[in-house]
Amino acid sequence: MIEHLETDVLVIGGGAAGMAAALSASRAGVRVTLLEREKKTGGVLNQCIHHGFGLQFYQQELTGPEFAFRLQSEMNEHSVKVISESYVRHINTKSKYVEVISPEGVFTIQAKAIVLSTGARERPFGALQIPGDRPAGIYVAGLAQRMVNLENTLPGRRALILGSGDIGLIMARRLTLEGMEVLGVVERLPYAGGLTRNVVQCLEDYDIPLYLSHTVVEVRGNKRLEKVLVSEVDENFTPISGTQKWFNVDTLILSAGLIPQVEDLGENLEIDAINRGFAVSNTCETNVPGIFAAGNNVAVFDLVDYVAAEGWIAGQNASKIVKDQKRESKRIPVIRGKNVGVLVPTYITPEEHLRIYIRLKKPMDKGTVIIKKLGIEKPFNYGVPSEMINFVVNRDKLQELKGPVKIEVIE
Ligand SMILES: Cc1cc2nc3c(=O)[nH]c(=O)nc-3n(C[C@H](O)[C@H](O)[C@H](O)COP(=O)(O)OP(=O)(O)OC[C@H]3O[C@@H](n4cnc5c(N)ncnc54)[C@H](O)[C@@H]3O)c2cc1C
Image 1 (cartoon, rainbow, N blue to C red):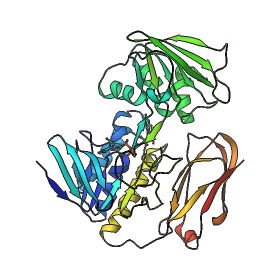
Image 2: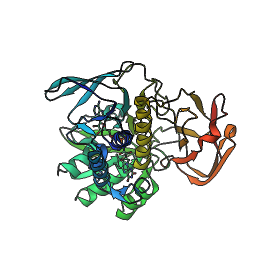
Image 3: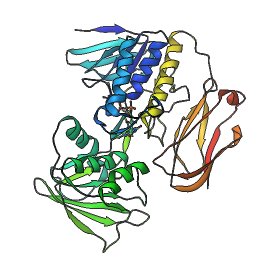
Image 4: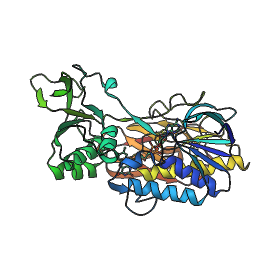
């Protein structure tokens, strides 16, 4: 049984972000250990058997498992030590001393730098506070996806999907292909939450209705779900009387958003209140020196390519700490202006190029991203909250920066 280990860079979580971080740190010549709570690495990629991964990172369209396999193979070539079935229960952020639970018992690891890449979790049924019964047959979409794609089981026969995020859209198609009847996708916003390509390829191509500005207001069933009441809502999401309709279904799939997994990891780590993930700079460093974070635990990214690219930078910068190459550098706060929702990074450190990721607060036919302090104006045609706006600012432009930097989007 392992009792204590020492490593240079410790990566916690073996999804796309963690594997990319482990790989880049290892290529920089330091000892890397990756901890993963599941039996194998890959994270959410393992259950995403559809195409659409890696167009930027690998310049090739891959499935989720193919993308994961590539990263895992490259980690093997670069001697990353992977310890699976290991759940990190606590990090002493100051000393970088980590406690891990494994099937053989508890062990500890002393690291010089740490990358947190713990991903995101799904918003559960309890958080939605829908009145009615609490029968079996209500699943978060990721669990339903896991059942169908990895465990070869169907969650039911007739389903309704609540929430039009990408997982919900993809599951509407998946369940249909597997022989379930999907009566529709219900979304309380007046626009779809997922990527446009998924609305077309997963709903329109299969004649599955999308009920925009609608929500589920009641669930009924004795032991198993029997019916779900759906209502149209106004702009404040208040149900409009007279618009209610019952759907006879035995399955309700919830795709009501992902929440970065940041809880209980370590003390004193700053959280960005809007992203709900770790507040990092463009070096991917958190407020605690030597602790980095990347991927969906920083903000929920739309593409795995962004997640892997951020993981790569996190790993590189973690290895610099080990090799004593890191310069002391300032952290300049980034402030959200008009129409900016999720925004990465939370701070700017001039030593690294600035990669900006923005989710708009609402769809816009056209708009311009403005960063006055950097003299940047980036016009775009048609932007939606589900698709991040992403661009890079060269670090040469950042050297003279002083004081907070505001990023806004005007129509
Ligand atoms: C249904 C679905 C469809 C998608 N479709 C696409 C697509 O078509 N194209 C695209 O580019 N992107 C797509 N994405 C997005 C992309 O898959 C994700 O953004 C990306 O894989 C997230 O990677 P991650 O490493 O941040 O998180 P995860 O993959 O969630 O990895 C986190 C890992 O950390 C581990 N972990 C968590 N806590 C601990 C702990 N305490 N100790 C040890 N281990 C821990 C978890 O077990 C997990 O393996 C999709 C996502 C979903 C859910």
